[in-house]
Image (cartoon, rainbow, N blue to C red):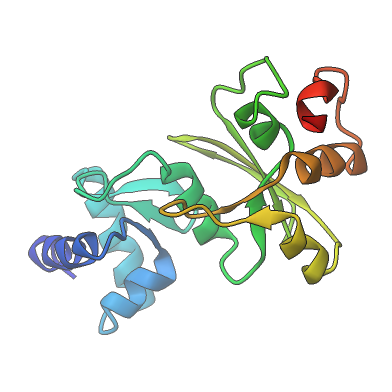
Length: 178
């Protein structure tokens, strides 16, 4: 992979609205590169600022025209690809006005994948594992057009917050019951 090939590939993916890539995605784009050559090439491209390393194994095209306000959600989706993920807990309760304290740089996500916290240049992603059945998950979340992750309803976010033992004192329950 060279810079010209990468720039061309990134432009093509940008036209399709994709600007966050896993290392596996980039390997599929450049299948002739050996793993070590791909790793070294990615390192050079990050130093040249053609890509931003969001976290281990995830890269962002910072020059994409399709770059939107949901970059951290795109990164979260890439980190837990193939799992059920949705914005919940404090992030969702903040969005619906049930929490007045502002979480400036943190996205809280419920997932059927592994729990974990990732620090990225775009903020912190906190994954909390859920053992809920898929049907229960799908009943309490919804898809929002042009948003990468599904979102919990107010009631689901509240239930998740209580279930995982987080601080519930900061929540205005009247807003949840509206």
